[in-house]
Length: 72
Image (cartoon, rainbow, N blue to C red; front, side):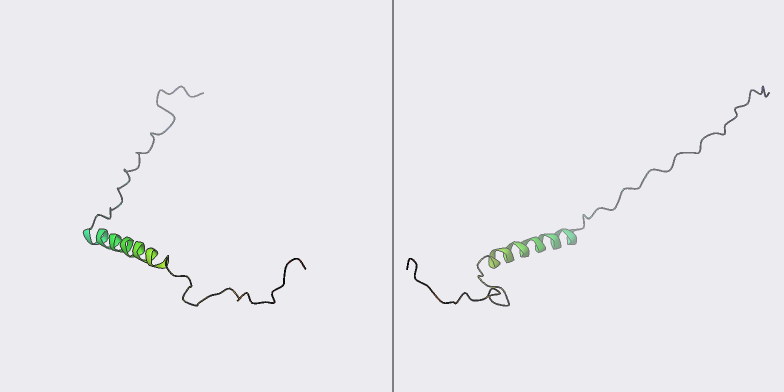
């Protein structure tokens, strides 16, 4: 039996250093590029809404067929 007055467990390790804050994108060039991209996207969305067909034309087949009279 051990009747020593010394602690039987070692001291805990020191805590890890605090996490560094990530760099912020506050550069004026980055802000300006982001605004320009958003402006171009809004302008393109407005222009695209007036197009009836895409760049490849109509993709649906033409609906030509024999017509029938209803009711008889």
